[in-house]
Length: 118
Ligand SMILES: [Zn+2]
Image (cartoon, rainbow, N blue to C red; front, side, top):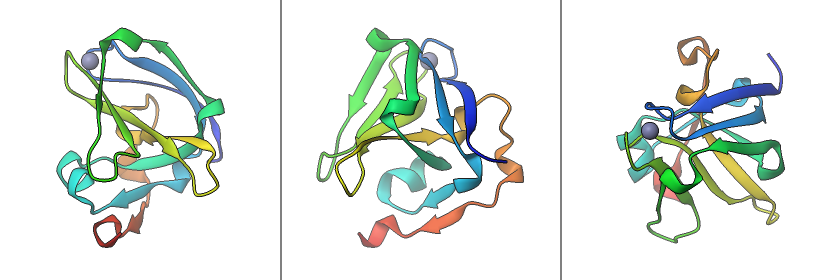
């Protein structure tokens, strides 16, 4: 598997997007939000991300350093992606791989990221 274009959405489908991402770069994090959310992430430049519906349906949750915008659907509550910046300042999106169609998260081997210690 390599980077390819995937469609993703929240549970109810109000928030939908396409993104070019490599699911093999999967990552699990133990920070306070990821441990509760249970998300499996992969990251892509925001330029590879396109929100196709739901701009007005989204909430924006910020905590701690308030650098990551956790985007969730205000109808069904699912966080399908988050927005922030990479170490070099490039706008990035973190994709909750569980929200992508045609990606079986059970078949991935996510790396562990110790976000709790950051
Ligand atoms: Zn929804």
